[in-house]
Image 1 (spheres, rainbow, N blue to C red):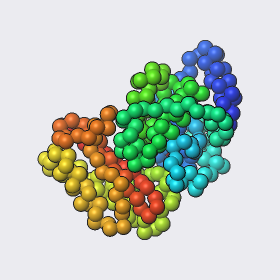
Image 2: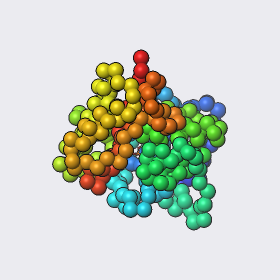
Image 3: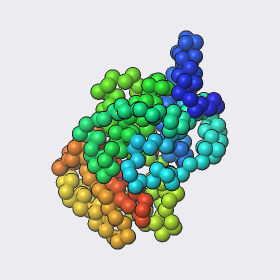
Image 4: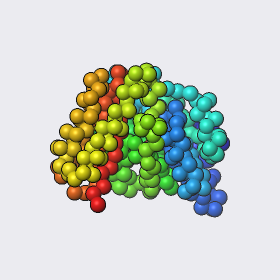
Length: 284
Ligand code: AMP
């Protein structure tokens, strides 16, 4: 695995790969490190669909709000590198903050409207940080395919829109949510949870399952479905709900009646740790 922390080095590696004329496809898996099975599932998907796989590892300050967990975000480069070596990744791009945002960098990519929904409303500026860094990664690495987890469903919708609106020549591939045995979606932030919070956190998935159950029993009114989910969450008084919404998976607009595919997205605090989860309701 070639490790690169410089943009020029990465551009050069990309140029060499496309100049040798054998048309090898490149897959990109953007991450913030602290890798878990969710990340590895994206890498394995990329390995099966692309000739070469690049993983980027960058804790992007631009997508953290003031008072969020940027400073304490888990970082373990050596462990991540060993995992990526084992997965047979070809390139690891791990730039420093100054490399990505040199002094004087003032240009941002904003997906308007849709970027202010769900986590975008709860975390102002978050998606602007995401779309800015992802478009930089697309420019630097020029992937044919880029892999994202359905765990961050709003992120997927926003990146798809950005790619469409800016005609970025990359295909977005999404992969299902990887969960622990008790249903909790894997997340680097799960490491923050104390044992009691870890136990409580399973309520996120259980509340989504309650929504699914009510839907399967014939309830299609979003207001009622949301009520079911919130009732399940309220069973644990230590949980602080941020949002539970039912929206169109592409526009993130709220849906009243689930007569077409609908994204049920939830975010809640367990102590100081904010976790998200979602599922897609599929009317038959
Ligand atoms: P992060 O390092 O948290 O920025 O995540 C990097 C990528 O991994 C994003 O596309 C996430 O959606 C994806 N990801 C994170 N957790 C999971 C999971 N539990 N299952 C599937 N993909 C995930």
